[in-house]
Length: 379
Length: 140
Image 1: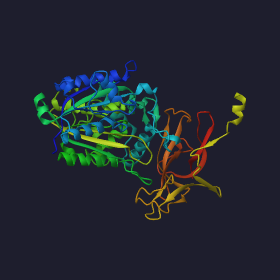
Image 2: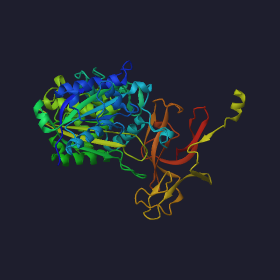
Image 3: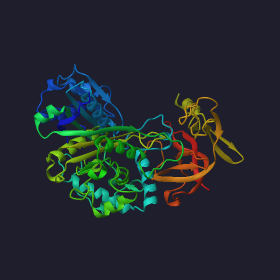
Image 4: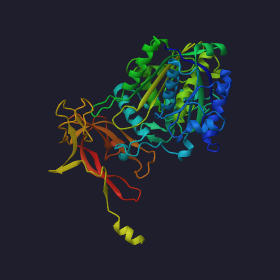
């Protein structure tokens, strides 16, 4: 028997630098709030999945131990930036097979523990030993994308300005200030053509959601259904690979649209993996919101602003809300649920009924990315 | 003691330590693998073909010493042991294998699809400050 999974409770911490807190405290905050939001008690939780990249051994147990919530199945999931989206997929599967009725999913990371700079990658990787880093990967993709589509640094700066316009309205965002495209272009170079404000910041944060059955979600009110929960891994290539299109995102989103029985034109609001502004543009195309090169017009017209024709990242996205890697996938779900319930406050997209979240990443040689997760939620 | 240690310090090291390249007639060529069943080439060399699963007869093969620069970036973010800035890129060798490496030019001197050739040179230093030598690329 396949049971549909619903989201009945969501919560997140504000993202940003919080080195003074322990990572366990950071995780506890949204966990307790998500239970309250779902209207349930600690004892109602049957199972827990925790997604984190740098949280260390048994991060889920460490968070739950302090509030007496162990003795139930806890599974820790590491899948780079997609860690907690992959954890959510497992929670949906636990509901689907009828193994559990209420599952808690936590996403968490505290990047200030790492001491700053670009996120550390696998030390044995051949490319990492020769100077590969995440900003370098995205910058190379950006340059090829610009070469093929005619996109300019101005476009890349406009995406950052749009993110800040939205982030300024989101109380959970790491950055809540507006920036002009000129200020973005004038910030220091990180990996050309990407300047500092075209790159997501490092920070700390956690988010939690309660996944449950239709019956329990309906009892709470304003139920949100998980219409698709898809995960794919990158295709290994030792030769040519088109880096101006994300084959992995195309493949994953296609599966999600098929599972939900809808198309990209039906998405009212999307939270996508804008780790760098160039990626946001590329993903408009890879997710099917427009054709190849169509992202330029979307950016120029402001289509993806909160009040635009295709709102993308009304939370401010990774660029502004922040990107404590393992926390991002679940934070995107929190935002999507608030949007669908009409509870997003100042950054509410009017009348949103179908939301898409897209979380991808992980840098190892030979792959576009390690993993990609796409979820589609409906009212 | 300190002096003795310094005397033992090598003047350079190679990455990868197996030195998967061959120098001859002023050319540097990477040693990759070719699958005799499906023809797939790969670098670094492997003992199983990822395309067809073949495990037999995979032999080292010399890859083309030249190719074109698919894309590149000048990294200004500081990475321990690396110069700042440094340029990296993906090169499509003439036999179809894509190789990541450093490029011996500033970004201003390069363009997409630039013809390049393989050379050997320093890419970084190890934690003891010893130069690390590997393959990299230069404009043709």
